[in-house]
Image 1 (cartoon, rainbow, N blue to C red):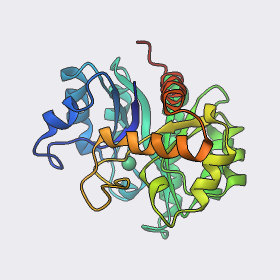
Image 2 (cartoon, protein in one colour):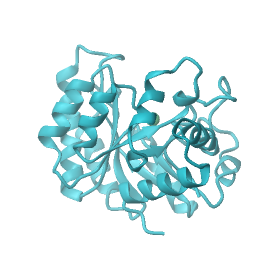
Image 3 (tube, helix red, strand yellow):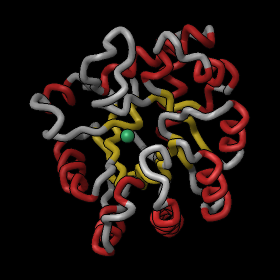
Image 4 (cartoon, rainbow, N blue to C red):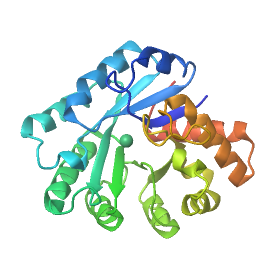
Length: 252
Ligand code: NI
């Protein structure tokens, strides 16, 4: 079994959504929500497909535009039995930096919801890893787990996050020919801290780079981890699946 711990599945992006989900039969997908507008669709996918779970959250790109009702909606959605985490949330200074204080406030308010409902946090961090780390360290309760989605920082920072109860989400970037840093991280970090993700419809792994991504393509990421670590693919799938079940507290 494979678990795609981070994908965006909506009928906006996929005309053949049903087929894309069927392709993952006997596997699990965790649909991540970035915009408050997408929460309803995430929940309806969870209701429709037994192997779809979701996380809900407001992405930092909405830090200037979200309102109180959106946060209330997030909080209400956390009561759904298949909404297994809060995310993706975090900081993105690459996209916009002049509203950093607003981004931080939105991030912290959602970490507080994760603390209140004992849900793991799916973190988006771009060009903001130091601030992301400091906020997680200061505001997250110790027992709350994190998934550092599409990790792109240093090995040293990966280790600091792991000490805060964090898993690293490894996706298609690992398969890109010129990507060296992430390969080093995968080589050095123990498998027990890694989970697989696609970030579909983005970041398609080789050999399909340039095409639209879909959850089934995590098998290429798993194969690359197997090659880098010199561990059988079967074992990569067993351990990363167990990690994802632990991270999101899913009992199957
Ligand atoms: Ni994402």
